[in-house]
Image (cartoon, rainbow, N blue to C red):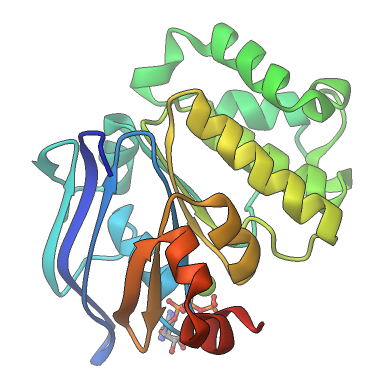
Length: 239
Ligand SMILES: Nc1ncnc2c1ncn2[C@@H]1O[C@H](COP(=O)(O)OP(=O)(O)OP(=O)(O)O)[C@@H](O)[C@H]1O
Ligand SMILES: [Mg+2]
């Protein structure tokens, strides 16, 4: 952990109605890091991301992004400050082309001026999207759709990218590819938080990780150290 703090969650609590599902999560992400969040189904991983991106209002706690509180701000304001979320399930516009989907992602004020240059960068990062620029998004394969969802989020020129289950439904070869791309994105200066079911791949590729269980942080540390711990391997990685 050596970069400047990009994201800090302090004692975050989130509920659906009167059902509390996140019970005081604290975590920190520093500039240039890839941070993985792993944990079983229902642990509160997606809920934590949604609350961070302003799509759910926390019951209590603080979300600090680039030194300023963002909890309570509307989602589009948070995007404008440089935080982009790729939600579980991708949410592409299936009837629109790949290029049109990407351009929509470049709409936030921070990104609009450089939209053409960013489009070229995203096409460079994902050559498959360049090759299929005029194909309808709904006809892409699962892996291609995931690349498009990530590419569209990058069009907003985020400082921090939150990815919810990017490897969901992908063949093992593509899962590895997605994680390699995550590293590549980080190398280009975008800090990444990745929520994953595929705990092994996530821990192999992340710098640090948090294990969520029952809405709380059960463990955290350098990803390699967590991967080396027997109880983590048995309980959360399935090794
Ligand atoms: N809209 C909702 N209304 C009520 N409860 C919800 C809602 N969304 C999620 N929950 C509940 O909140 C808890 C945490 O869900 P969440 O989706 O954050 O888990 P997760 O860690 O992302 O799980 P998964 O790995 O299965 O995606 C679960 O018990 C879930 O049933
Ligand atoms: Mg989830």
